[in-house]
Amino acid sequence: MTPIFIVGVPRSGTTLLRVLLDSHSNVAGAPETPWITGGYSDRSLRELIEFLGESKLGPVNNLSGLDSQTLIGAGRLFLDRIFDTYLKARGKSCLVLKTPDD
Image (cartoon, rainbow, N blue to C red; front, side, top):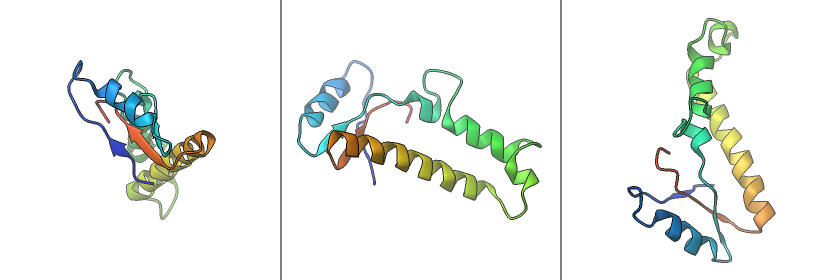
C-alpha cells in the first residue's frame, strides 16, 4: 500500500481536500497521524525506531545480525498493518494522509 500525501501550509485547505477525497468510495482520508514522526508531541514511531537503533539497550546493539535497516523495515510493516486494517474496516482501497510533518 502506497499512501497519497496531501501537502500544504496551514490554513490552505488541506483538511477540506482530505474530507472531499474521503467521500470517494475507494479513498480513505485518515485522521492526522502525528504519532508517526512526532509532529505535535515528543513521542513517535520515528523516535522509537531511532532509540532502538542507537541505544546501548536496543536490539541493534544486542541481537546479532540486526541492523538499523531491519528496524526501519519493521516500522514500515507496522504502519502497513495499521493502515491496511483501517482501509479494510472502511471498505476502501486507497489511503490519503495529510499530517504536515509526515
